Length: 139
Image (cartoon, rainbow, N blue to C red; front, side, top):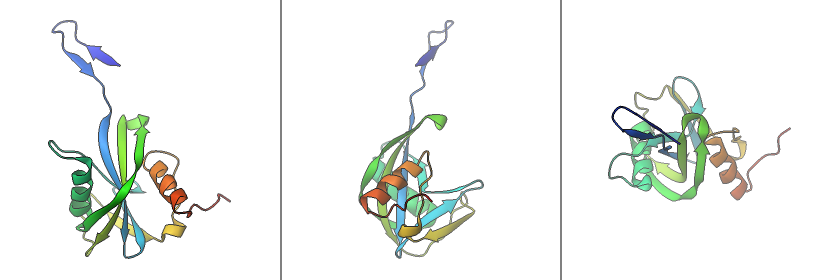
């Protein structure tokens, strides 16, 4: 879908914005970070001339101060509400966690205790848990 300006002819294509996301494993736990509103995965936008893999390693470093190594890609997920496409990775990280100014706090969750949420990056969490046979049945 696109919108156009009849006066100048400019066409705006409202294409989804690519976003990278990481399930970050650190010292045996999954790190969930909270901005001012909610806890979630580490996410960020791609920058010019950057691959998704480079972007997620950069985001893990910028937001948590951790050196990350991509274990694998989890999948690609559409989040229509924000017009975004999430490219999700499993990242193992090392170092001391130091949050940047974007994040208010973080929490460590054992993989077997992690519960997915039904939208956005929660779909990647669900897939990751299912692949590792860690998904708990909903009570």
